[in-house]
Image: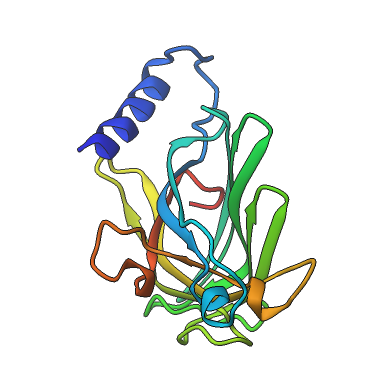
Length: 203
């Protein structure tokens, strides 16, 4: 209920002109929770790390959050690009999806799809597709769909699961990371996390 209430407040604020000009466009909105893990690194003897949980639920420009997203609708094939970055003090974290394409079945079909996560000074990047994560295609995008939120606003939703994602500056497998569901579900490390983006360009 807390997430639905926050989205509702943002929409109502835009409709009523609270704190903004009447003609100001509604800002893109992001909603996702994910955890950063290092199971592969541990398995390969690269050392342990503490799992880091990120909870993002706000609109662009609020509470250190930057959100941009664009959806291209063309029959049964849709394109998706987005970037979500949370800044706290001097540290930033976030996710970027480039050149994703999804079909009516919600599967990512583009061979040019690229996913990038930032964790402070570290950047992890790799290809994304519809199959289970592998070293050559570490990120899986699934169940991508165009829907409406509880206020009737257009949004895009989907699931992301990344394993074997390499550190851009040093693609040593012992430094790989996983980006998954958090521990609110059993075996969260094996489950994708969900994302939701409202008010994207093109919707």
